[in-house]
Length: 521
Ligand code: FAD
Ligand code: 2HG
Ligand code: ZN
Image (tube, rainbow, N blue to C red):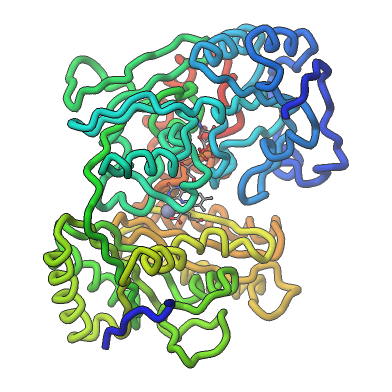
């Protein structure tokens, strides 16, 4: 029976500092992956003086300690050696910086909130980091059309908070919302938790302002829902991961904010039941279904260990904050609509049906905003929980629904066979391989939690995972992108002709290859 929820620097300096090799030692991406430095110019004191003529001293970072955060990614898997971070405030400043870098052949890395999960946002060698952190103005919002225009460096959560006051919602939500930037979201074509409802950014972004490698500004910050004149150029930059230009402005269509939101957190006995539950949700909840996420048992164990609170489906008298009931799978389902009574009734009927025919064996629903947020943490918290033991290998793949979870099982079996995996034996490099994700979008997240980053584990996983995905006609990246991690593997998802066309476009708009080298392709 369904029970109600119980849970109840910048330094003013002109000298080029060298990153101390000792500080990063063997963890440097370039060493770890034996990358050869491209034929780019090296930063000189004259370059610094030039940047000083464009920016204020507090828009330039050269201090060794202050550079660390910009050189290392969120997973602490990739480490670069940049000696300079530039923080332009205007599109004109970005344009002047890129025109100069292009002329000098200085390589650059566009960086947003640095929450990317494929090593795309940090340098490999000494590329200059161009951070959009100081480009954080909301440009305009049209209440009648819902068209919202922002600088690329606006934090996703700040954008959504602004829109909430106007009765609208940003059509993207993800666990990193407090840190990632809208420009970074567009550059990665982020998918997130409600793609099922609001679709991809390829549909909701109406226009972009982008600075090309040579400093040219492409201004297409349109307010038009329909425009069939010529190629839709903005699409080239959505998901281009900093390889084609720096996005400085985004125009996006933001729908009305739902007035009524419900969450159900469910326990299920098998992956088949997860699929059945999704089919029923799609047909019976239909227009009010706004998210359908699944988690396997061990992903919840990882979350429990890191969240240190009682699992939503644990009985009141159960002890231990890091225990999880023995259901093999969990589903978090969200409904969003405009009339509470209508949505409640629909959800109740749905739950009666799926519990009546034992598709679902346990569950709880949110009763208020606090409970709703807490339930989401058990899904959103897995990304962070999976790296609590030292590191994590992450894969974000698209697969047909019926073969989706078999990838997790195949990887678990492979790691066991190779004697790499154990939750108890600390001498084994792998702690656990877990699966979860946006089942409504056909997107699985496979996380392999490790005690430390380890070549043997990486070799066991790659290209094994990509071969599996290719064999099942999936995509090796459903949402996080190619970045550094998958740059050699695009062939598993794209044909030779497609790869050639991608290379042609890159070469055309960035002939010197200064934008985010060593990544993407
Ligand atoms: P960054 O990490 O700074 O950069 C990412 C890439 O975009 C880099 O290649 C960078 O060079 C480029 N880039 C950044 N800004 C610009 C710009 N202005 N112009 C051109 N290129 C630029 N992703 C999802 O898709 N769905 C999820 O549900 C999701 N959940 C996440 C949860 C957590 C806890 C974390 C840590 C990450 C998650 N991600 C998710 C991945 C990540 O948050 C997204 O990819 C996000 O969109 C990256 O935004 P960012 O501003 O941090 O970009
Ligand atoms: C999510 O859906 C994100 O939570 C992150 O895309 C997934 O960390 C991951 O692998
Ligand atoms: Zn995701």
